[in-house]
Image 1 (tube, protein in one colour):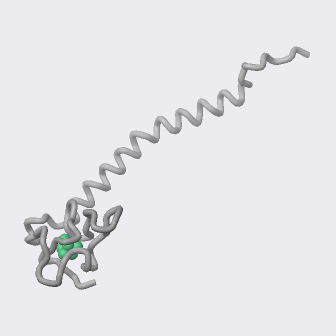
Image 2 (image 1 turned 90 degrees about the vertical axis):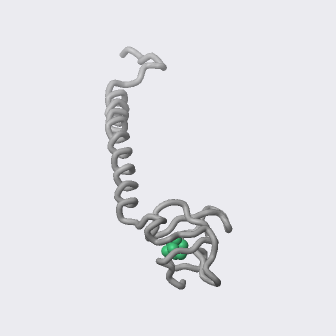
Image 3 (image 1 turned 135 degrees about the vertical axis):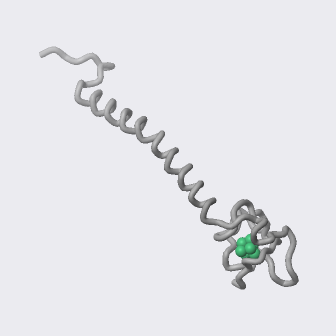
Length: 101
Ligand code: SF4
């Protein structure tokens, strides 16, 4: 029996790898479409800063960091996001949609 060359990939293994690569290549654009669609849907569901009179400073003792809608940033004090207002949100900000948390 002829011994296979050490650098030759068996046909079945090569076909399996090609199938995986083709599947991944086909899925990448779809994943990008889904993520951009999700971002667009998220933006459409949220109020603009203007609509809720967002300001980058507190309103007395009310501010974004102690609002139930605030989603903290990566580190304490860093800008975060908001469940109801679009865009980057300062933890020291405030808006009309403030909800004591
Ligand atoms: S609802 Fe208004 S006050 Fe509350 S986190 Fe969002 S932007 Fe800040």
